[in-house]
Length: 442
Figure 1 (tube, one colour):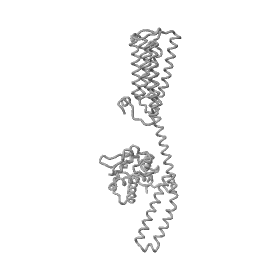
Figure 2 (cartoon, helix red, strand yellow):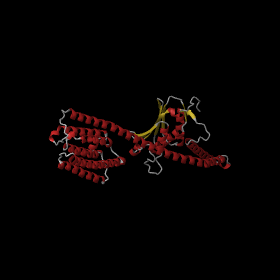
Figure 3 (cartoon, one colour):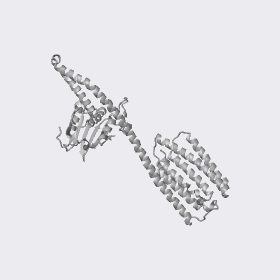
Figure 4 (tube, one colour):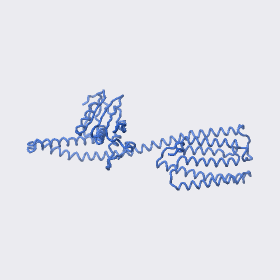
């Protein structure tokens, strides 16, 4: 980003702003052709219709220079290069200079076309940043005042009303113009700011709708898979149950233990599928599981440790409350996802801290791994953002981010100064509180 662009308030832009810049420059080229035609017609009417003595050669030179510049602008549009705010400002500045020259050659402030300066201010307010708009208002006001001060050094028209800055009429015109330019700069820039804010909000809503549609699609697939897997898992559970009573198995203690381990894993798979169906809204006739916040977190950590016996998880909580909450399967799953990522990045140590303060529950998971790459941090909450190089990966943090938002909370991630990464899940505890929370917990 160049120094001039910083001075004019220009920020780095993407492909969308590049397209908009080219369209804006094309609009200025079209308006300039209209201005050239208007100047030619005005000169012809003034000379032939009103018999005014004008310096035709000088005025024609200004028109020719404006035509040459406009041809150059059209040629520049064919280069397919981004158009910056600096370039748009300079294009408007050329138009102001051409208008000032024509006004100087045809009566100065007494020329009724002097209020065309307001068009340049309006265009700047629509096309440029706020600081640049005020610069254009200042430039045109200075040009207006310059025409007043140099009035007796240029050409005058028979309709000359006389007087300089000491004339109430001329001074009133200058004040009127400055006031109109300021009002245009203020209100049009505010209107354009509101329009840009609205467009940004609509773009965010469209992005969110697209992500929600993606989640619904995945939810349907997960629900269907859960239904399909339920039957074979139930069959395996029955077969393994029969094996535990078979004489050939009971006679071999080691084989019996293997069968029981397989039963436990099948039961775990059934529990996971039940959680998927519960998250999809299919409660399978079961009541919501009630517990306390401490018991919920303790059981969550115990389940994860049981599933990962080799993990070295440090768990601590600062919660002085036994408030009744719902054992939310979605929250359980996102904590498992983040803990799994921490285990994969840092097998030697993981830290899980839970803090309840002012009704806000904060879950913080740290590891001592290499940390997140900057691209993942910048696109946190976007699907398929992963550095693992495997197709279909990168949904863990995406789904976790969506579940946290459904709890009216946030999920953030950052790299630690001492090394490693930290993922923070924060949401109001009231999001887990049932409506009839006075009933005893399980």
